[in-house]
Image 1 (spheres, one colour):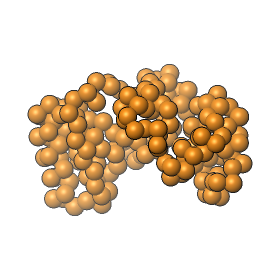
Image 2 (cartoon, rainbow, N blue to C red; image 1 turned 180 degrees about the vertical axis):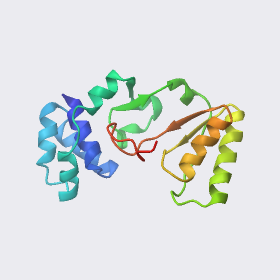
Image 3 (cartoon, helix red, strand yellow; image 1 turned 120 degrees about the vertical axis):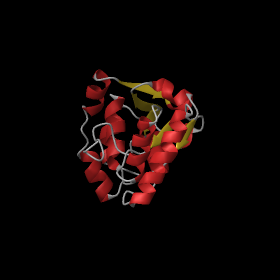
Image 4 (cartoon, helix red, strand yellow; image 1 turned 45 degrees about the horizontal axis):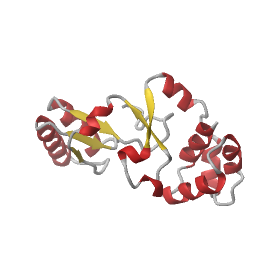
Length: 169
């Protein structure tokens, strides 16, 4: 199944261009998942991470409300760096509203977190969707600000579907 290939590739945490090249060379079919582990293009650390991928995580996620959206629907230039399907969990319509990305350091100070919260809150009150990475610090403050403003927020996960980072979220 092609899901195994993408789970292994995401777990490997390769550079997007490298990942796309591997997908083109190996093909995201069931055999590609195994061939990926043998690829000389992977560094030892990438190979180790790929081997530890939870291959059933996407199947479980699909049963729990995650949908697969064609990449080109959300990002017309996706062919250069994204898998053919993006995983989406939640209300997809929040991405139809004007969006703003608010990202920053995990080790933000009080002022930085407060500013991110206030900007996100104001944008949400104006009807926009706040997009961030879901990490601690500025990202978390932005998500909380959007919710405090009665708006919607979207987190772009940097990891595979099997890992919520940070775990406190």
